[in-house]
Image 1 (cartoon, rainbow, N blue to C red):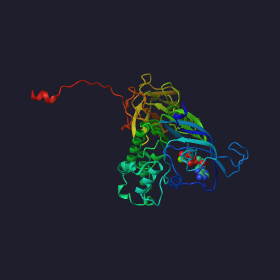
Image 2: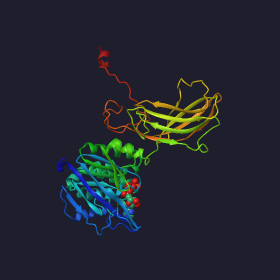
Image 3: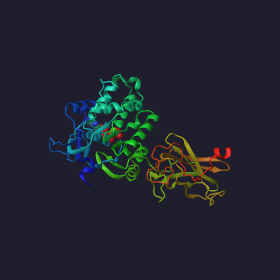
Image 4: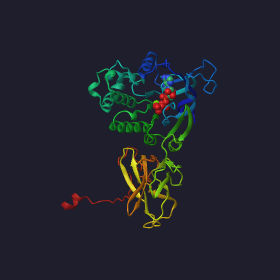
Length: 450
Ligand SMILES: Nc1ncnc2c1ncn2[C@@H]1O[C@H](COP(=O)(O)OP(=O)(O)OP(=O)(O)O)[C@@H](O)[C@H]1O
Ligand SMILES: [Mg+2]
């Protein structure tokens, strides 16, 4: 890979905080921006900062003072020009700290960062703007920071205002904006001013649902327009949809760097994300009725491995393991599937002919139901395992949302998925792949006048 193709190069970056002390560097993007303006800027910025360590103790040194926290320990990676990189990890993993360093809001304690290209960043709520200036002034300020001429900004101005929906407040200082309005304008500016590198921290968590969708689509456009994008999110659907590649941060180090699917799977599978299997070892606390007791429930991928990250194009199995305590009853193991809005997608009842209408002897059993490939929609799904006796119907156990898993629809499945080559958000609680046929129809107008 030639160095021309590299947009961002991060080498052995570490960041130390002293707890209880405010970071002495700029805490807002606005303050950092004003600083930028004071120093002359070229369209192509290329900087290299190497911060000498003021004492010899690094993140791995023993006897760390109690008030020292290493938010980043030793982070290295490169981002190619035009790549859309997702950064994931638990709360406190160091994601925002990393983005602040890349946006030059705060310097690394050690290590170096190289960036080629104009950066526009949108970090947490509250950052992004200079408070005393109006919305209009902030738009021009941002554009100037990106090295644009007034005429260029004029051309984008209407699109920015239109997208943000804050037209009425354009001449109001942004300190009077609600946090939602602020984010709307900040996102519009960041995405429309054609930065070469766009850095976005969890913007989707703010703003209403309609605006979140707009943001996702806009970011998709930016990514497809060949710009470099760094995107932090806790939404695995957003990450899998937008990003070519992902990095998993854990306690300030890069735990994994690779394809989005692999990294998201590793994150979810590590138990840091959602648990896709659950076991009840203690009979005293296991969900149970007089007839049967729940032992375990699992979500399996097509290879019958426990997984929290399922491909939309592959079948998924839900496995319920239970113990029959009292023999002689006809049993109906079943489960319910809910999405993350709490909508019940369906209930599935065990129809294995082996046991239909037959009373079960005591013992341990596994019921495994296969959900067909290309039925579920992408997103986080919850499974509630349950079991009832038939004739009479007596519920034995039901555990609401016992396990969960993520269904992932990447843009690279082609004709194998219902998405095909369409890259944007697809609505609906299910996403079946239909059989499609087409034919050339006669023009009806011609037929009726003939
Ligand atoms: N200014 C600061 N002073 C002291 N500690 C800080 C400061 N900023 C961040 N930290 C600490 O650094 C660690 C990493 O924080 P960071 O905000 O980067 O996490 P994150 O991955 O963005 O988490 P989240 O998912 O919650 O946004 C945390 O332990 C946090 O408390
Ligand atoms: Mg954060």
